[in-house]
Amino acid sequence: MPDKSTSSKASAVERPQDAPTVAAPEKPATPLKIYPIVKYGDPILEKPGAPVKKFDAALEKLVEDMFASMYAAQGVGLAAPQIGLGLRLTVIDVTAGKNPEAKIVLANPEIIHAEGEVREEEGCLSIPGFRGYVVRPQFVTVKAQNAKGESFEIRGENLLARAFCHEIDHLNGILFIQHLGMLKRDLIKRKIKKLKKQGEW
Ligand code: NI
Image (cartoon, rainbow, N blue to C red):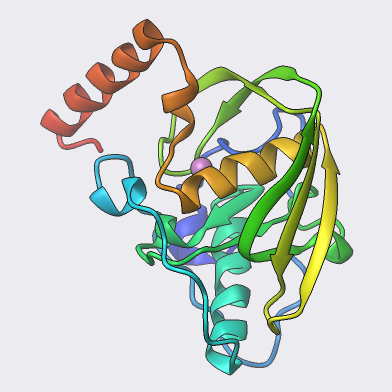
């Protein structure tokens, strides 16, 4: 991946500060599609997604394209609404492509257990250039389906727990700025408005 089109403009958000830039895992035979990331202001980001019902080859291809798009944007998580699809589907890889076994697909995910609290800085590929401190659970257990429709449970700690919460929020139409204090959130919104006016958003 990182290929010509989008990677040169990739932003460093939704990526831990110290994460090295690494190439994504080997390319499968079918060409991957790199989707542009939808930015804050697009109503799809604030609408709950519809459940994934069809677990077919098209969904598996979509999942691989989502991973490719996420790696190209140097993110550690990407939810379907962020590529303009109102679906309860998200991909996560907190190793940013370093470990192929760390690739997680969550279709129709639900948080079934959460414990502890961690306050950490967070960003979002759809709100590039802005970060803010958000309190999230330290441990999160998620029940979901994989790309084949098989149910599973997965437990995450710290960054992975945060990624689960952030991405599942996306599927419910919630963005991380909604967890910020009103002053910080309004400041970000005002700055984005200004960027939009200048044609830079
Ligand atoms: Ni996000």
